[in-house]
Image 1 (cartoon, rainbow, N blue to C red):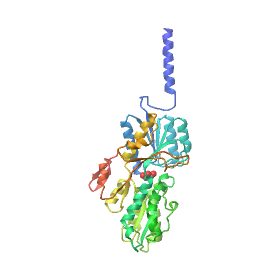
Image 2 (image 1 turned 90 degrees about the vertical axis):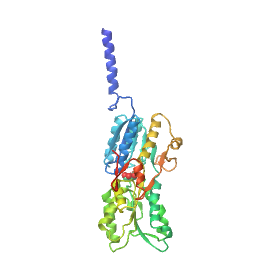
Image 3 (image 1 turned 60 degrees about the vertical axis):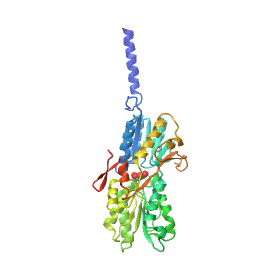
Image 4 (image 1 turned 30 degrees about the vertical axis):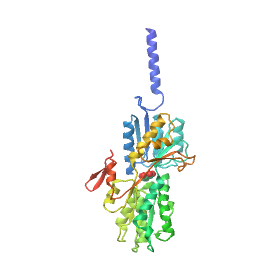
Length: 373
Ligand code: GAL
């Protein structure tokens, strides 16, 4: 009897020790857990990304821990630390500030947790295994080409068109790619005098918008309008790197521009308020990056990593959607990060139906609404 009791005690001790191992509250259901760290709910796209990724990973049989960090760098570091403490098996991180996660991700690496940089590259850390995004330079290029076509710059003759630029958050590694992509298309026309940046602000640092904030873009545009366009000077186009900044610019145009025309305004993301502006003629286009595509590739990549494989070009080739494996473009300061890059597309009022076909939007009267949960 004593022997049996001792054995039972030993088993109980082993079991409770096992339960105590690690301070995480990891579920003991045999499933692997994926930690997803998103930057903020205040920018619409990250809500779509977060909920869609969660849904897809859960459907594929993983547990998901999803966090949003309110665009606050300290909070994102804490959120990731918590995911590490919970012993997630893989981290997917869209950084608020690409330069601010080095220590935290070192900790993840020391705990053997692989990290995928999602959409935005994370700098100065060798903890990143892969980067999944869209071809960010192409996003800007599509915006520049849209303006080139809309103003028919190739056939401008002696016409001169006035233009301004609004870029994204300097803390976001993507922002310069977007700006450069657009600027490189338009620069020859600026050099030739066909395009005139009336404010003279053509440097990324000058036109950037901290945290992609709508109000900051609005304030800057109002200042430009008051300083350079209040005498009736016509503004023909504004290149905006994304929809949240385009929203601020459109609001400034509505309230404070008196040139008599609506300038061409670019955007990115397909945010529903901006799609509404596109229908209403207040914004010209948005560059659309299908979240479902980004999620599909992220899921396939995660599966391979979690199965101990070392995915490379063949993963891109095996996708049904167009995807490039790039081992040249994205150096995060510690070396090249192998990247899976998807293809963005242009949405105007003429092809809004394409968005409905993604399953992520639906018509509500004349406008589109999001179907993401
Ligand atoms: C970028 C992202 C864009 C846009 C922006 C603002 O990094 O690629 O799609 O949403 O951030 O959040």
